[in-house]
Length: 348
Ligand SMILES: C[S@@+](CC[C@H](N)C(=O)[O-])C[C@H]1O[C@@H](n2cnc3c(N)ncnc32)[C@H](O)[C@@H]1O
Image (cartoon, rainbow, N blue to C red):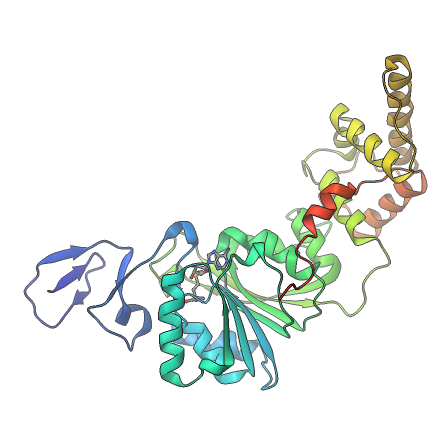
C-alpha cells in the first residue's frame, strides 16, 4: 500500500496513491531518517509528542551540554530516540523516563541496533511521579506540559547536578530568563533563579519538529549556583507562592485578603505550636484582627505595602521573608510540603 502524508510527502515507492495519512501519523523514516517508510507511528499531542528531527540542532544540544565520557545523563521523554542515540555516543550512561510504551519499543530497537543497549536504562513511568536516580546532567526535549513542575523538581530536588540542557517553549524560556525586578519575572523565574543561572542557547523553529507544534521553542541551559542563599527553601517557596499569587497586585492587596490572612494564621499557629482557639467567635475575631495588623505592620516596616512582587530584587524578597518570620509569621504548610516532597528520595 502507498500513502501520501498530509504534508505532501509520498510514502512508499510507487506513485499510485491509495490513501492519505493524517498529520499525526508519520512513517518511521520521516522521524528517524534511517527507518522503514511503510511503518507508521501515531503521535499524541496530549503527551507532547513532537520529535526533534533537525540534526544540526540535535548536535548543538549535545555539544553545548559539555558531556564527559563518565557522565550519567537523565533524559525526560526520549520518544523514538533521536537525541538519546547521540547522548549514548557521548556519555557513560543514559537513564530515560518515558511514559509511552510504543515509544520505548521503537527506542530500544534503535538503541539495540547501534549496540548501545547496555548503556541505556529506560524507566517506563511518568517522570513527575517517580524519584530521579543519581545523574550528572539532564539533556532533554521535554513534553512542554511538565515544564514548570520539572524545573522545580530539578532545581529544588536532592540530587546535585552540573547542568540541565532543556528544550522549552520559547515564551516559557523568555520568562525564565527574566531576573527578579524585571517586569517579566514570575514565581517560577524567581524560584529557579534563586538557585540556578539560566543561559539561552538558541531558538528553535516549530518546523524542526515532526509533527510540528504550534509554538516555537528555545534551548536553555540551567546551572545550579555554587552558593545557596541562607534561607529555608521550603519556607521561601511557600512565601513566593503567596507573593506572586497575583503578580500585578501590590503586596498590601495580596496579603490583606481575608482567606489569605486566615490561612497564614493557621500555618503560623502550627509553626509556633500554639493551637488555635476553638468555638469562641469573639476570641477568634480578635486573634484574626491582631494577626492581620501584624502582617500589615511588617509590610509597612519594610515599605513593601505598595510594591508589586515582580519589581522586587532577591535581597528585598529575602528581607521581607525574614521580617515576617521574625514576627512569627510563617508560610510553609507542613502537610502541603510533605506532599510536595514525597518523591525526593530515590526508591530504586
Ligand atoms: C517532545 S517529545 C520528545 C521526543 C524526543 N526527546 C525527541 O526530541 O525527539 C516528549 C516525549 O515525552 C514523553 N512524555 C510525555 N509526558 C511524559 C512524562 N510525564 N514522563 C515521561 N515521559 C513523558 C512523550 O511520550 C514523548 O515521547
